[in-house]
Length: 497
Image 1 (cartoon, rainbow, N blue to C red):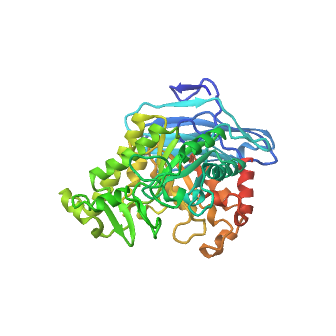
Image 2: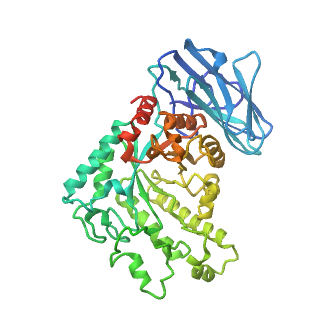
Image 3: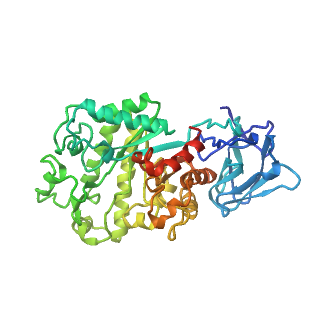
């Protein structure tokens, strides 16, 4: 792909681009039968000051395609608005206020977008690229969008298996890899530290009970080394999924090993506030600097020792808003912040430390977080998603768990998707949508997931129209499940699998 700076509004050479958000954007094309042709835009991204205008072209060519049928709109009208230049194939972007918007062209389910950054004091300039999107039966994705599936610890559990050998584990994981590949996935998000433990030899956390039935007992092989290799051999990427704070939940695991940090710290009067307990569950306390450092060290050893492509935290941060769980460390901190703001500060410190540590070791490894879709819930648990989505030095991507459909009464998908698109303002932070494959075809949420066999496929298209970077499905257990068969057929059709 060739790129050039555009130093004035008029481009000397028409350069067709099919675009998504951020650098290395994706081309999104849906498999359809007719018509067949191309959708093109002549700009990839553009920066401008408030009050500036910029004209660009969006055109279609091919059998049965009508220029007048192109829909062009802005994802954030308050930052940059777009209007048709009468009598031409041009559209005009007007910068209104600072921020990032995506001007999107759409026809027949195929989308292209221009990333528009509005910032005071900048000189207008942009990028173009020589790519063309295909509309019709031979549509292809010419650059990879994130098409991931989560593999939770339950799918890796060997604890009740009669055969707990390396070969048995490898066979189990090989099946998960093959399944993901068959269904068009390009990335696996694999649980490697679900309970303050590890599915790899660690200097900071005990062996997981999932491998042998007993926490702290070595299985005699390195599961993570094999999983990374097997994933890469299949042409997919591997993100190590870590629960940074969770130690136990609802009686899982049933017993903690002697070398578990919780066991050692709780017996030390100087460290017994380094962990927290709530409703029978146990968590590390990020309000203690040494605990944050311990968690960071655990991430560092993964990145140093394994060729992972990414690291992901999920939504387990503070389990409650109750002040009692960490009152000792809060008082000891001497802070003047409220408990809620202090907790957000602690989580932000942990997140920024993890990010900077990863980049020092392997700059190409990405770090992301998958928070809840409810922003208020995130803030209540100390997850400062506003900062992560707008400021540098925290994450490479955010993947809210959008486990709702358009008929959800409290948080309908479409409006929630727009809210998250508006929240992620940093152009260097990618936005993925986590989708509830496990709900497809089920009777949950008043049976609304049974109203259509293309709910998730439509959600993927909605994400594309908003200029997001892809999606993650929860979970691998439902890729080839009877309950989700019809929905997965729609997704595979959309992906061209």
